[in-house]
Image (cartoon, rainbow, N blue to C red; front, side):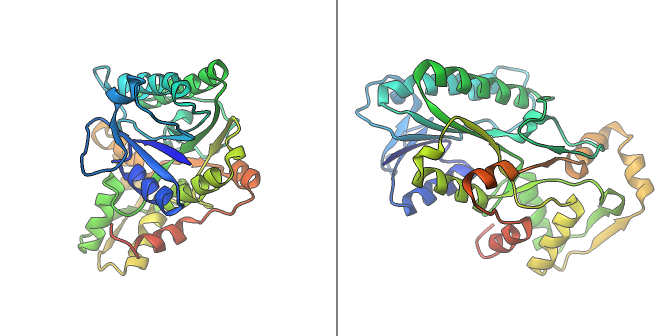
Length: 304
């Protein structure tokens, strides 16, 4: 089976590329630049020319800019327009299956309000990035009818795993270096969903081994529990045996800082509630996803 991966040079893509190879499937890589060191590596220009002699069984579409706001068309070009071009090219390569990796940000942003998002929750994109993800999801729905495609759309929260270069990865490196970090205990009631790279692999392995599971559906995928951000950091500290000191600040500090424009956005983004449900995917696939504690333990057996 031939599996095309877009964004294979990114954090998630590099992990899925290795996982698909380990499963015994043939991987075709699509990237912006040709890499002579990689087998089956093609540029977008080559792919969109429709001249490649390829038969593709399934596409894992991961390619996407990873920032919230833009003053130019980079997010539209890198998310919506790119997705449209890929979908339009699939019939020429006899491909009928696509897995699109979207974001849980289509539901909104972290906030101080408590609640949980399911696949039936109203979409409320609040950033340029989230708006383009919604637009790309809609294109998948429309083009699936036009081209007779089957799809899965995965909506993901914050993803963590080895070699991540996100802000959480930088935070973990600070803990590894024993640097002190502030903590706000007053935020323990605000719950967040996290997603271990291992759980993404579990879902993709199920899909590729059971191609009928790619059947025009939308799923949230996340770890099988939720945590306050403080708990997430504390759990990593304990598991990693970090010598870092957590400074517990009084709750009044959180209230003061979140009212200051310079701190508000970053603090709400880190500590705010953003809890999604993964019940639908676990029932549909009859699987049990790992919890965040297991994902953190697995992380430490590999290189950050």
